[in-house]
Amino acid sequence: MSEVLTLSGLTRAPQVLGPAVTLPGGPARLVLPGVESSDWGLKAELNLGYFAHCTAEGVIEALREAGLRGRGGAGFPAHIKWQAVAQAHGDTVVVANGHEGEPASAKDRWLITRRPHLVLDGLLLAARVTGATRAIVYVSQPDSVAAARRAIEDVALAGLVPAGVSLEFFETRGGYVAGEETSVCRAINGGPALPLAKPPRPFESGVDGKPTLVTNVETLAHAAWIMRYGPAAFRCAGTEDSPGTTLFTLTGACPDGGVFEAPLGTTVGELFEAAGGVPGGITALLMGGWFGGVLRGGLDGLSCSHAEIEAVGSGLGCAAITAIGPDEDMLSLAADLSGWFEQESSRQCGVCKNGTKAIHDALHKVVDGDADPEHGENLARWGTTLRGRGACAFLDGAATLARSVAPEIAAESGEPQMDGETR
Ligand SMILES: Cc1cc2nc3c(=O)[nH]c(=O)nc-3n(C[C@H](O)[C@H](O)[C@H](O)COP(=O)(O)O)c2cc1C
Ligand code: SF4
Image 1 (cartoon, rainbow, N blue to C red):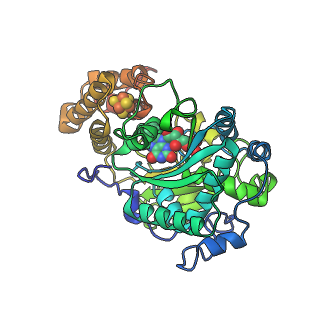
Image 2: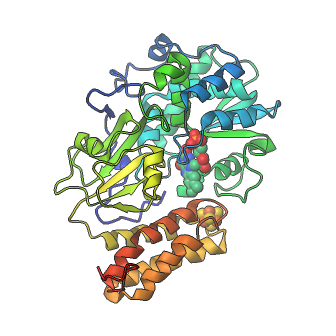
Image 3: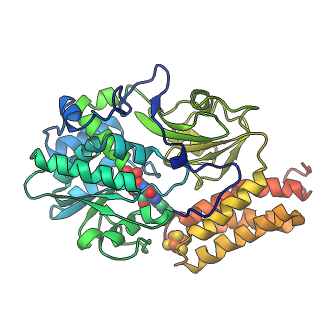
């Protein structure tokens, strides 16, 4: 992750990492009372039912019934991913992805530093289900690395690592793209932490060329929770399409940002009220982190479930949400964000290298006072044509940003709108 770029009005989430909280009256599953204390550790987790004993089929069925969706960004159903690797019926690898390159997210770091044994419980569960011989925690931030290392030692000393499984951690360096699933496998295999073209996908061939399950640390923590308390209990929070709670990272124009556990489907207004409110009201959001583009208009009542966020043309991603207040200059912010995209591109694909540069150049010209209808048109076009063109989904994030600010630029430059009016 780059340390040099500072975006106007945007705080990198790790800078606000404090104690995590639950929303008033909400269920506490990951953010339990006492979990912030230094006494919390393997003993506390064992008291809660560490390392459930169940068959591989039983686990996959429980994940299916619970409706657990991945917490790493795409929200893919966990049971389908786990099943795909389990079907290899051979020597496989499981990886807990704790890189968290997203600057607006701090929840994975919170989880690994406060509840590492819960993550390991989920990882060893995944190893059992898929028949893995290697179970690897992939981490980059120094306190996450230290916490993962300590927790692995605890679990090994307690004799909880199943025979035939090597429980390891892998310390990675690298920017945003180091957390993409093929980057993860490539780095563990000794290469650079940069994406590879797909196919093959990791579930076909990943670490050591073996079928590999790469899954987010929060997904694993929920999987462990489901095996302790059951899928029906999991579904007591959340919506039909997005069951359970999740760890939201709230940042931006709110005084008390940080990590909040809340049911999926909680509204934007309820979330930011818990973060101390947004003076003057929320004018826009960066939904799903710096990757998710700018979302405007009538946001307080927006329900934070996958279906509802997708219905407004965005994505929940890793549940990092940044509130933009009325004092923020949206276009300057977008120009800064586009600079971050250009900087974080791994520049392996010409279309991404050139596309992120073109978006940044256009937005910079606009901010410098050269707003021209052509810039709005280009950004709107790139927002569509660049989508899906990179070897990884990184370029889609830049395209989403371009598409989300194009109407604003059209308005600034006095370009007629589709309906014939000039805003
Ligand atoms: C550019 C890019 C960066 C990513 N970074 C991360 C990351 O830091 N952590 C993470 O868990 N997933 C990240 N992902 C998603 C992973 O590729 C993968 O889908 C995820 O780890 C799967 O976890 P899940 O199924 O539990 O959601 C990234 C994806 C892209 C395209
Ligand atoms: S799309 Fe961009 S970030 Fe992804 S592999 Fe290609 S150049 Fe790298």
